[in-house]
Structures are given as C-alpha cells and as structure tokens.
Image 1: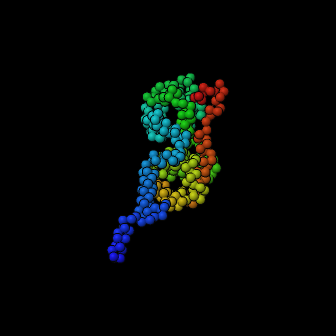
Image 2: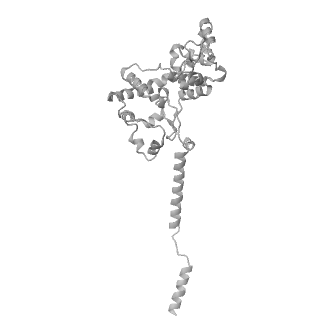
Image 3: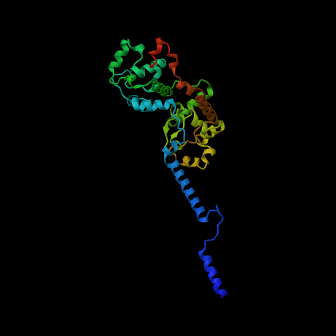
Length: 310
C-alpha cells in the first residue's frame, strides 16, 4: 500500500510543473536573448562595414568648397577642354600656344579674382573686350572659353574659384621649411591622393568614409591629434591608434588606396619629414583660407558689383 501511494505521489509530481521564482528567466530564454543580440550586432556591423549609405546616416562627410568646385567643373565639361583635372593637354590648333591652357597657367592670363570670375561667367574678362589683338587670337582658335553666367549661382562661382585657386600653383609658403615641404610634397605626389592643395575629395572604396581625407578641417582633426602622429603618418603610413583599433584596422586593411610609408626609403633625410609637417600645418593655417577667400564682400559697391558675378 505504501509502495502504491509512493508511486501515485511520484506520478502527481511528474504531471505538476515545478515552482519557479517570478521574474527569473529560463536558461533557454536567456540563450535566445543572447543569440538574438549577437545576430543584431552582426547585422549592424555588416551594414556598417559593407554599405556606405548606412554609415552616411551617422557620419559627417567632409566636402570642402574646392571639392565642390572640382565636381562642378567635371559636370560643366571643363575637363573636356582643360584636360583631366584641369592639367591641360587638349590640342587647340590656331591658338597662341596650340592647346587649351591648364589651370596651373592662370598666372599667364588672370590678374586677380575679378578676372577669374569674369572668365568663368563671360568667357573673357571685361578689360579685354576692346582688345582687338586678343579678339583676333580667340577667333583664330576652334576651342573657345564658353560663358557660364546663365548656368551658375554666386555660391557655385565661389566653389569654382576655390578649386581653381588650389590648382593655380600660386598659393605657396615663403618660409624656408614649409617651402621645402611643398617641393617634397609635389615630388612625392601627395596631392594626387589628398586632392589639390590637400583639399580632399579623392574616392577610396573600402575606406571608413569612402574617400581619402584632406588636410583642411574635421577629418584631419580626427586622424591627427598632434605633430607626433602626423610625423608617424608620413613616415610609417599609419598610427597604432587607428591600425590597432578593433574597427579601424578593418578599414585599414579593406581600403583600396593605402597611405605609403615615406620614411622607408622615400625621403632624402629626416629633415624632410619636418618640412612636410611644416607644410601641412601651413596649408591648414594659411593656404586653405586663401583658397576659399571670396572677394564678394568687396563687391557691394555699385561700381564693382557687376564684375563679381553677383
């Protein structure tokens, strides 16, 4: 009898759910939550790494006036005549020099920003309208500078002028150390990647923001905290703060264009790094402001307003 009662009691216990403390999750539920959290984190990381539009929602993308000017120049067809990037090379039989001048030859044709703006807006500066010799040379050439006045806003002209300033070759330091840095930067091809005068804008698939950072503002501040880091970027092509970061190192490996290590056999002396650092600092302090300076504030007088494209 006792054995029977014990068996029945055991059966009742089998059919009865065990008591649980309210609020305590089952181990299976906890595992499910962890699994879902891991899956969500993996999806978020994949979206961040693989889809630039996902990063664009949370990142601040840098676009300098010179970069906007470059894209505008490309859209307007400027490079069809002035060559890729405005570097010249397009033949123009019958013209004075036999080809369309590159943007780097501005000093031969442009006296000031008003001249530059009038070339953009009207195809020729006002001071040459009555120059018979100049008109004869223009008419002898099959390719002639078009007038864009009907197609551009004042801010777009500002952006084009900023881009043309960066390509002019006329914004140069005077002190010996940054001047040497400018020469070495040209020899090393720094601006082929960092944009004219370090304005940025060159695409770099696989990189953190999709482009190579310039020297002018926010992107540079995030990547270079002090001169020691700048020297290491130049010498070694990277810094541990980025290359050893759990996320940063992924983009360092994935990006198509990688920063060269110029300190490994590409510089003539350690002083070259000092010169390049001085030049980059000069660009940030002086050149970027000069490139984007607009004369429109000087054009408020009625006598000069028509020359400024406003």
